[in-house]
Image (cartoon, rainbow, N blue to C red; front, side, top):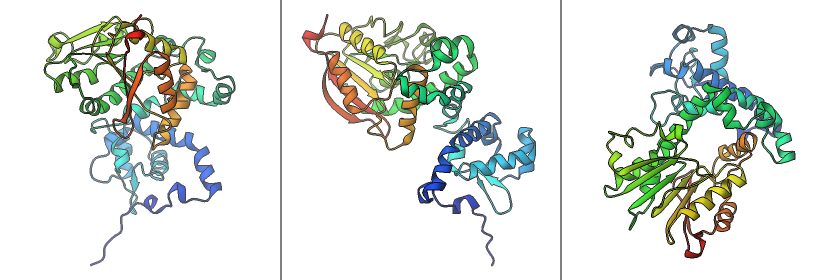
Length: 356
């Protein structure tokens, strides 16, 4: 019996690390084409249109209403980096990465892919040399206003993409954070800048005696996780607090969680930590959870570090820079541990002398 080899031709290609330096460099400088290809595939909903069986270009082109020849060129470009695979008969099928771009895949990265390739990013990345030279963000120079003001006032579609991407990221990490945190003796917890409150909801579900508060901007908490809102399963133990943690933290609790928000400019980070210390009881715990550029197995974190420099003048921290910010605010850092492969938790306490 003769077996037909339908293995993707792209799978036989050498990995980027195996390429000679000149070719590797060419691959890197054409990174924008790869990012644009992913964005195009997502916006055309190609990953959603492709089912479990391989499909011809004609079938896919008809399903997403595009021209067949450009579609083949797009998919071949993506197949070169293992996003989709092409069989010897010219049909395309899913790979593990292309499935992550489907809307219905658990852990989908569809919204993250869109956020990282939004139109403003193509305005900002060419100015990275200027941001490096000056140490400041370029968003205000481009748009004449702070980045998030631009996003919500002038680019509502991008704002929706941002909200969806942050929701995706928070949902994916909330269970890990809830499983990681030991809450012996903790009766009240506050999630500072916690977005829709996925971490808080996960903690309340895991600890039936726990009460908690979610502090974020008014428009954010208005759209909090339905479990936390009036009529929700956790509403009796949850308080929604509209506010800006850079201005004030008007909540007292046993534990304060600050997850992935100390990435703004340094002054905003200092104000947030100072406001938490000012609000907390002596002996209260403050747990900061962040991606670290010096403890990451992926170049994604270092790329996000530059992303933050461009749009808000912020940064991804190193372990030492995070400890320095927390210590400067008056916190006693007692433990640093990984939550999962992407996040690290900095456990600290508020000493009596730090309270103002």
